Image (tube, rainbow, N blue to C red; front, side):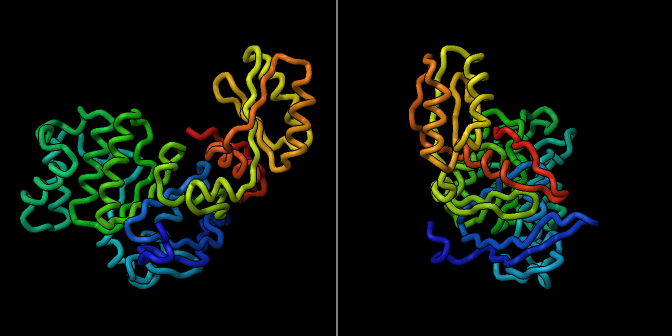
Length: 323
């Protein structure tokens, strides 16, 4: 998808936001096309949720400018709010009401005419019709997320904000949820989603890595990986203990920027390909190991970016393991 050719759903420039002494968004600029699924990645507390809210008029920036759906985020926030759907991390509906009753209550809150027709359509679109009389409190995580998405879509929003929508949901339910997001994107709805799951990040049309309020990278998954210029090798050893010892040894050697265990293998990554290969040959010379070039993945890039970031209090954090 060419975001310079497609009309922009969101176009923001040099956004800043401070809470007390802490600046949680620092000069971020982004352009998101209509019908685009845009993923936000970054460690907890990095400003992902704040950034999403700023771009859609739910928070007012301290500095910067931009538009959402053609509305000014500084002066036309009420108009923006009427055109977006927001799904939080936590399930926030009434456990002792049925799916239909929850949706009907939400439609009533929006003061929507012909509520029954609107609710029936939402039930059908999200595959909830057969469960319409089931109490929300008895739903699994995946079905709760479907209910939440159905409620978000009742008023026909043109932008969806999803804050880690599939946390704690099983893999099959996550896949079905993302299939639905791509269907909505195909209808021209823009989706902004924060996630820690690398397989979900790869399903986004575009990505932004944010760490401690600063935008570190953005683009397609392929372009983000390529721009980092990392070389990765996959190492296998005689056993897990030997790989652990090798990992510790490599971390202090030239060219090695990170070592990450993936099951019974070790991913060794760095920017200086020649120095990295020399260190690997030296460290594995005793035998028992096999070393082979590997494609650098989003997880490798994620860990690399977070390790290189400095948080708002001036400390370098340990990278969180992507899920």
